[in-house]
Image 1 (cartoon, helix red, strand yellow):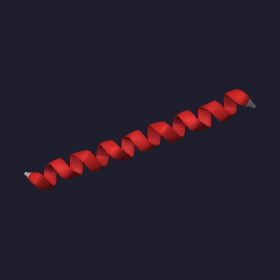
Image 2 (cartoon, rainbow, N blue to C red):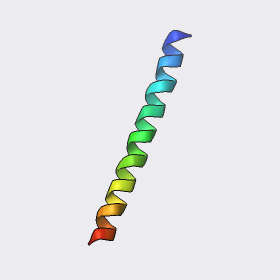
Image 3 (tube, rainbow, N blue to C red):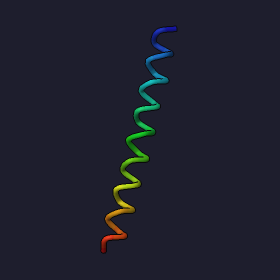
Image 4 (spheres, one colour):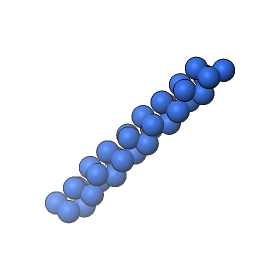
Length: 32
């Protein structure tokens, strides 16, 4: 149970990181 919960949180964080990275690259493209 605990491990499963941890994995869910980790995947959530990773997804958020990926989304943020996508946003930042989009912003960079816009500024250019």
